[in-house]
Length: 137
Image (tube, rainbow, N blue to C red):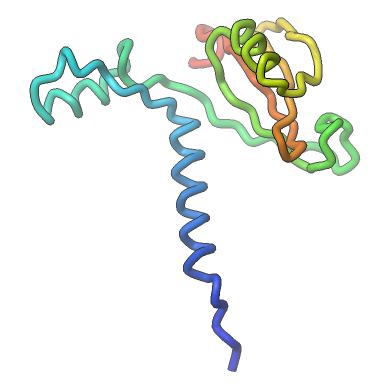
């Protein structure tokens, strides 16, 4: 008989927390102003509304790379996380003040602006300020 894993409940809990965090990052939910909301029904209606103050539409992508890719360098990991952001230039200035490692300069493309940073664990992170008309259709 196999011994039960004493950490299985903790591992399941951590998996659940990670899944919720990733979902919130992808969905980009913004809580509406409470000044305009008088009851619970109005809150849920405002939360569903794609207008300013409501949820924004975004894309989720997963892109495999060749095993020998150098794209994730200087990280030693075999993955990279990409976050959609607003006002990339201002964000990069704030990150510099916090001594975050900025890997490269902001790059402009047809899809928006990009820059790469390293988190405290050495994971490469791509920050992306999309051009909405090209990335939400």
